[in-house]
Length: 295
Image (cartoon, one colour):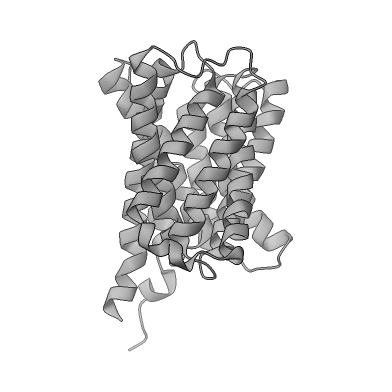
């Protein structure tokens, strides 16, 4: 019983560690995909993650059935579309806009749960989502936020990322988490490869070592680790809390940019990061337990 009570907090910390890997991978990817095709990068990144997960959990493949394959495909599809639309959006808008609009999935998830599925959402979740979004705004919109056509693609990306998190939550109690995420990574790799076929900039064997360094880091830690942990974590964590941990990514990205690329760390970034951490604490607090009992 005690172990089960502790698992949500352990998985929450493991997810936050995963967002640190995501944040650091931004610096690797920024250098590695400077002049190449992002779709080729996605193809190799997801393929590496699928291979690693297949090797680590090879013994589980005797449980593979049609239901698990369908679940993995349904999980992989919104993740693939989210990545593709985000990539298209990045070609027409700024990194600032992309980071903020993608972060809107933290609000879309409770909205979908409440509006489409009539599931109750606790007040503290609304409060923590609002705090986190304001913190994200402080980080990414330091020089203003000007919307353009690329932002429409990124809005679609946020919708699909929200659908991805909710789909993982739906199947987390119904199928083997590691098998479904392995299939999802395979779907994403094949879909990204298909998109790369229509990209005139696509070079399938880049000679730039930074490209392969980015693939290794993002594929192993930012993808295999992160999505594997998330698939297991959502057996114990609500979708809203998972989305909130995603917002730690720009905080770690800013720290990595300062250390690895020499980018300055502003007061707004630190204040925004502080608000996101407060939002995570608010999401975890049980206010009823904190109220004093009558003597």
